[in-house]
Amino acid sequence: MAHKRLIGMVHLAALPGAPRAQLSLDAIEAQAVDEARTLRSAGFDACVIENFGDNPFHKDAVEAVTIAALTRIVGAVRRAEPEWQVGVNVLRNDAHAALAIAVATGAHFIRVNVHVGAAATDQGVIEGRAAETLRLRRALGAQVEIWSDVHVKHGRSLAHETIEREAEDAVLRGMADALIVSGTGTGHAARLEDVQAVAALALGAPVLVGSGVTVETVRAVLRIADGVIVGTALKKGGATTAALDPERLRRFVDAARGAA
Image 1 (cartoon, rainbow, N blue to C red):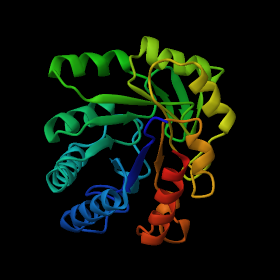
Image 2 (cartoon, rainbow, N blue to C red):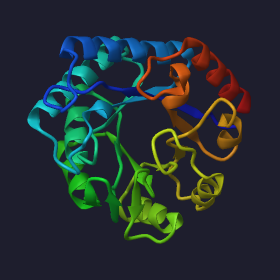
Image 3 (tube, rainbow, N blue to C red):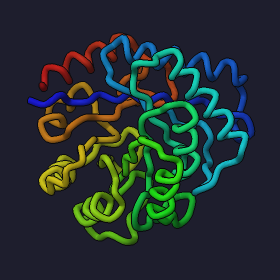
C-alpha cells in the first residue's frame, strides 16, 4: 500500500493586531516550533501552520502585520526542521499571502479554502481566485503546491452542487495539486461517502481528509484517502485550542500506520 501522509496542524494563537491577541510574538513562535518538533518526532510527515486564533477572519486579504508575523513563524519552523515539509494556510482565504510566505520561507505547499467556485461563509461570499493564484505562482517561479479544499468546512458551495464537480474543477481547471475533503466545521468528521466520491474520480491529485479524523476512525479513512490533516484529535481533552497530548499523538500514529 502506498505511504499514507500524516499532516499535523499548528494552530497559532492570535497574532498581533487580531482582536484576541494576548501572547507576544516570541511566545507564539516558540510554541509553534515546539509543536512542529513534537509532531515530527511522533512520526508526522508534515504540518500546516495557520493563523487559527485570528478570528473573526477577513474573507480574503489580511493585514501586513499578519503576513509579517506568519512569515517569521513559518521561517522559524523551517529553520528548526529543515528536512520536514511545512504548509501555510492564511485564513480565511488569502492564497496570495500564503504563497508569498511559502516562497519567502521555503515552505512546500499552501492550503486554499476556496480555490475555485464560490462559497457562502460566516465571512460572507468568498470567490475562488485560481487564475490569479496560478499566475502569481508562475511569476514567482515557485514550486509550491496548492492544496484545495472542496465543499470547504464552515461554508456552503454556491457554484458546485456536488463535491465531485468541485473536485474536477479544482484539478482540471484550477490546477490544484491536492484535494482536501472535510466535515462541516473544525473537528467535524468528513463523510466517508464524500471522500470515496472524490477519490473515485482518480484525478491524479492526492485526496486528503481535512477535519474530524480521530484515533478511532483514522484506519477507515486511510483505506480511502491518501492522507489526513489532523489537529483537534491530537490535543489534550480533544480541544482545538489546547496543547498537544503526547499520548494522543502516539495512539494516533500507531493506529494510522497500522492502516498501511
